[in-house]
Image (cartoon, rainbow, N blue to C red; front, side, top):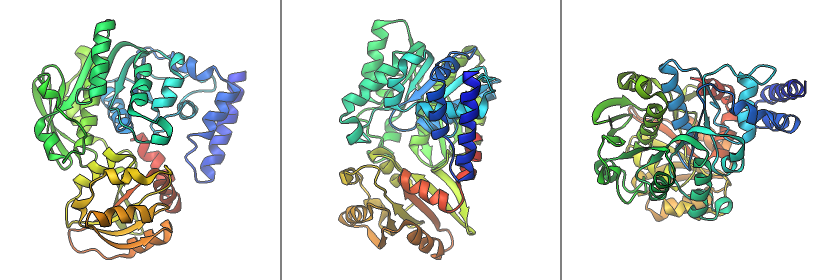
Length: 425
């Protein structure tokens, strides 16, 4: 009865949040967790084929979506937090969406994205059949203080794996973690990475000093061999296959490689590479990650930038002269010095800079020799002007924004419910 009451209240809060234009992915789960504190732990232990946890600094949402799609394509019924809400309350909100009045979820396996810090905080509440770690970066210095702390949090999550961990073979901290795991227990360790050619083409955006193929063959890891726009070639057990990507950029190919290796660990002999390639090619972007939207008849590409790596990689993917660009930086961090770690010189010109950190971003662009058309802290008025700006044949309008600016624009232009539907695809 206590669980049923908690779920009833949580769903009522969820409905109210959505009626007011929100996603309902935070507060409902928070309320439910307070009323039924043991529910989440019970749900996470309830799946016949176990739990897969995806964590790391960047790429969690796309990797999770890809992995869930791969397992589903192989006939496995998957429970996942498709809204990308990766805190404990977000997981419980997913239970409210997909579970019954007892909190029971009809699925074979759970594939869940977890925030690094909160995942480590609730590590005692779950055992994961497989843990996937994407990378170790410092994207919020106020929250994490150092990369060493980020690595420590991810190590705590990895310690909850019972069968395997899947790690980025190009990330020094994760390579060290993988060696430690291999020495200390009998967990299988799966790897994914890129070739030197892919690394060099990204102009240091991936942030790796060496590549996976310098330490292991494609028979030991899923390797990204080539990336062109929204297409990539990956090698799996020495066999190369072409795949489509949900968005342009090598970072999405790396996410695909992580998802493929994780699905291999889960499926074993059931894994079908041809089916995996077809499935990956059909995946749509996670909202804000290279997502194509239409507002007032204008097609735009939405690109979320959350840290140095994601900003750099997305800048690298833009086609010089073909993009009309709107950059919006919010106040996720009080310290805006991270903007100076991104090389923006390839942009040549930006039409609008907006958000609460507009002046900081504009100054950074100008130091790189980038022409800035207009600086306007008022996000909505600047965006309306950008929408009205004419484009020449072949030009596209691209929006680079941080999470707070993305949320504000999505609410303003009625894209919240579209976001919920897109998360389910």
